Amino acid sequence: MAASTAQSCPRRVALITGITGQDGSYLAELLLNKGYEVHGIIRRASTFNTGRIEHLYADPKSHREGSMHLHYGDMTDSTCLVKIVSQVQPTEVYNLAAQSHVKVSFELAEYTADVDATGTLRLLDAIRTCGLTDQVRFYQASTSELYGKVQEIPQSEKTPFYPRSPYGVAKLYAYWIVINYREAYNMFACNGILFNHESPRRGETFVTRKITRAVAKIFLGQQKEIQLGNLDAKRDWGHAKDYVEAMWLILQQENPDDFVISTNETHSVREFVEKAFRIVKIDIEWEGKGVNEVGKNKETGAILVRVNPKFYRPTEVEILHGDCTKAQEKLGWKKTYSFDTLVQEMVESDVALMRTNPWLKFCLRR
Ligand code: NDP
Ligand code: GDR
Image (cartoon, rainbow, N blue to C red; front, side, top):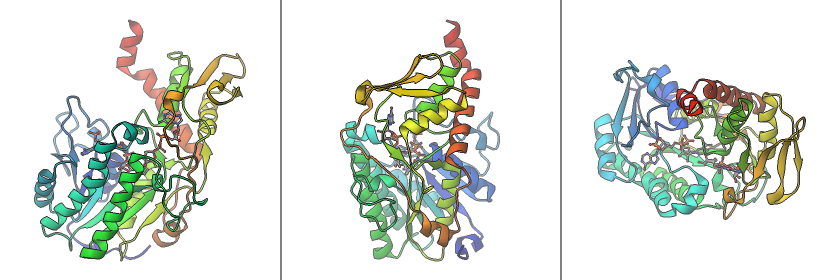
């Protein structure tokens, strides 16, 4: 790993947009453990949206802030971004905030562009407005969705982009504006092109978590079956904990650069389903084709998985399979979770959650 200029700097102040999300929560944890002062931007919501970071308060009961400070803001509001950047004077900015759901981006195309594309521009400009271009190192949450329609396999930093959703297209703008600001204003601005990464903290509507929650509920007798979309889609699934380490490493290098972060393996949604049921000792056998395909419990014959075209996308990304050789060689980064340990951790965590969730218990009693 290259020597770290940021590390030798005495002030280590990180600003994280999207701190309440899956990655934001793991990254905040990582940076607090490294001794950073961590600031996060949160949105006003009618319900609590800090569930993933509550344990990081100095006193979780009273929400007393310690080294973690939260600021209300939104990627669509440049005034607040300027105010927060000016107040925090960060040394590292991690731009993780996004409307991050690919299927939802087809329904909310304009909003997705506003947050994911223009939002990135607003944040970069806030740093310029505050005169901090020389002081700040900027990380952009770029994505394997940029590759979209298959151009080559595996996909590396050199593979051409062909996004297949409003989300992918918005992230393409963000990717290039980061590079443009690096070249135009000499900013230390980098893209992490991260392939799918999951965890027990993954949002419940992404396919892995949807599967592990359903498997847990089916195992506990709280649900009968799960409905999914495209079972043939293939993804390169890693663990979010490993991937936030890569984000940090990218900002500790001598020079700003862009990196693919992946496991270099690909698995289908069908395989994920089989593996997840296996953890609770259920073997799945498949019958039928396309929308008529079902997954049955091999032992009892009960249908546990059905295909519902409602979950299909207008344009699909069929296969993602990364090649992270550059990150391995230059950052010294490597994954610590395998596909099997990822699925196992997620299923076990959901089984424990479904067993204890007081709201579920309340609902079940009624
Ligand atoms: P999540 O959906 O879990 O988190 C998204 C975060 O962005 C949340 O904190 C959310 O706030 C916040 N956010 C959404 N809209 C706005 C807005 N208008 N203003 C301010 N904040 C907003 O995503 P992940 O943690 O999984 O992903 C983090 C980033 O990495 C995203 O940019 C995503 O696109 C990208 N990415 C993710 C990959 C993955 O596999 N997880 C792979 C590659 C890239 P709230 O909690 O209030 O909703
Ligand atoms: P993705 O993740 O679109 O890759 O974006 P998601 O888990 O939503 O979908 C993965 C694949 O599974 C197929 N699929 C289903 N997906 C969902 N959500 N629900 C279903 O019921 C279902 N059935 C099958 C999808 O069609 C798709 O092919 C994630 C997000 O985190 C992005 O923000 C990030 O940029 C990319 O990963 C890399």
